[in-house]
Structures are given as C-alpha cells and as structure tokens.
Image (cartoon, rainbow over all chains, first blue to last red; front, side):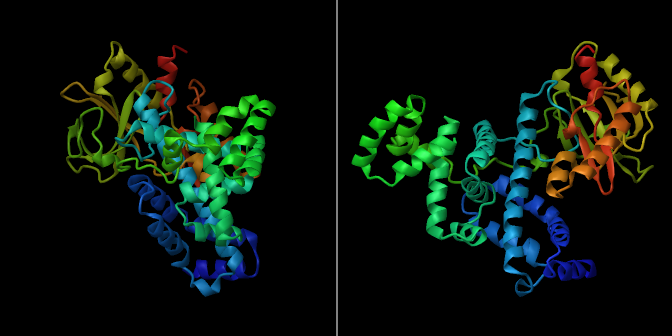
Length: 183
Length: 232
C-alpha cells in the first residue's frame, strides 16, 4: 500500500513511468475481470464491468486524487489488457479443440468446453480489429472498448473525450466494417 | 478498409433513396467493394443479425477448466501413481497437465503432472514418453521446468511429474506490462539460453513460455513431443 501511495504521488507529478507501474499493479484484477467476461459473455455485464474496472484501480486510490487524464488512460489500458487476455484464452480453447501437433502445450489455464462459433467469431473480430487499427485508429479504439472492454458508450465518450453521439456513430460504423470483414 | 471507411462516411449520412443512388455510382467506381457496401447500407435480415451479434462479446461458457470434462476422463481427486490430481492446468494435442500432489503426503510440494491423452494412445507412445522422460531428466537449467519424477501407474498410464511454474504466457505478460524493446530482448536472450541449453529440442513458441515473478520458465516442454512427432 505504501508503495502504491508513493507511486500515486509520482503519477500526480506527471511521471509516465509511475503511471505504467500503477496500471501494472491492477493487471491481475483485470485478468480476472477478462475471464469473468468470457464466462458471462457481453450480455447484461456492461455495468458490472465498468464497476469492476473502477474498483480494480480506484480501490487503491480515491477518485479525486487522480488526474482526469490518468483515469482516462487507465480505462483505455484496461480494455487493451482485457482484449489481450480474452484473445489468448480463446486461442487456447481453439487449439485445445483442434488438438494436434500445432498446439504448444502450456501450463496456462483457461480451457473449457464451449461453443465453437463463439470462439471463431471472437478471434475473427480481433483480427479484423487489427486491420481497422491501421485504417481508422479511433474506430478501432471504440470497438475495442465496447466489444472487449464492455464499456458503455458514455464511458467511452469520456475516455476518448468525444461526444456520446460520436461514439454511437463510430461504433455503428465500426460494426459495419467489421461485419464486412467477417463475411 | 481505409477506403471502405471513407466511402461509408459519404454514404451513411444519406437517407435510403440517397443511399440507393449513391450505391449505383459506387458499384461502378468500386466494383470489388460493391457487395460489402450494399450489405452495410441496405442491410437485410441476415446483415442486421450480423450487426447485432457484434454488439457484444459472445458467451463462451465456463472458462473454468475444472468444470469442463477432461479429454482423458480424469477427474480431480483421481490417483495417478503416487499422485492425487488437484485440477487440470491445461491441455495440448498430445497430453494434459494437471496440478497434483503426493497422495501419501510425503512431500507437501504441488507439482505439474503431465499425462498423455488416453484417447490418443498410439503405438510407440510409451517409447516416446520414455524418451521424453530421459531427455527431461538430463536437463537442469534455471529457465527450464525441472522433472521430479516419472513412471507408469498400475493402470498403465505413464506420467511425468514436473516443477509447477505459475505464470502467464510470456508474450501476454510483456504486452500487459508494456515491456520495452530492450527488456524484451533481454527476456529473449534468456529464452535463447534455455533453448541453447536444451540444444536438441525445438523451441515450442512463446506461448509455452511463462513469466513468473522476475523469472522466465519454459512451462511444459512441448517441444520434446513435437520434435519426436514431427520426425525431426
């Protein structure tokens, strides 16, 4: 806790390295959160996810003590971590199902029985998002936060400092492009 | 995708009649994108369903491997030789790895127990397993999980008892901790050291490497299996 307090002081002083360290401290909680999202899917979990992301960071730190830009950066970071954990887990599930020598055996957890379509879809969305990142980074960011992070449109608007209407338009357009890429 | 994005910016602002007219022109100008643009601008039931499906992450069922049936048919609490299975840690095409402990309590230490998949028993498997055991037994390196014990239980199931390395895939760890290029290279050098040490083996990819605390360990050395099954 004292280490976190010290980190926080440095974050408030604008130390970007300290901010990364503070984010890393929340990593294991984000990891758990990503697995919870995998288990429950995206339905009816938007509010829960947002709450949990808040908790994972702000548990350490009273909200008022953080600069707004640090909070925003954390939300962006959290959706990136969740995407990475979710995609890794989905790859493992697929590898496990396919079997064969292409699959490196690891000690990682996160395997289970599940519907094949859902995994292929998540992986396809992830790959299409990589292409979208090149074409239109903001659309990709909105899509990542919405799809993998489970944030509300309002949350994304605050994080990216655009209007909620812009997020809605971006998300609709992103889905049109992703759907085209997935067809 | 950039062009698609630009074209959608033009057309999404239009009403349906405008979109139809716009599509006629766009079809001539961009014939390869015509179908995708039509699906996006004048969605039918199927396209609408696609968009709805993309609204949120699909439910993937239990991510908790303990609730999933093991391909081997083994369950937590089962005995394999002198070991009692605690929970399944993972599985590959050829084997499962379980967290296990000595059933007789002789050692408190938890270990990773690697078991070949019963459903995939093949001729020569036992010999291959014995070879893997011999290779592993000869390896002693800070970056390679140690082999503690190996044998065949009374039911004929071969097992390898190895050091249990808690961690996560190295690449995921690096991304999550925003590890810079110099530090990644340093980790890579450590990987190379271990690979060089086990010079007979084939590296099994970064997914098989785990970062645990400040140390790097190869999780389960799948490379030994792969080397043999690949005939190399």
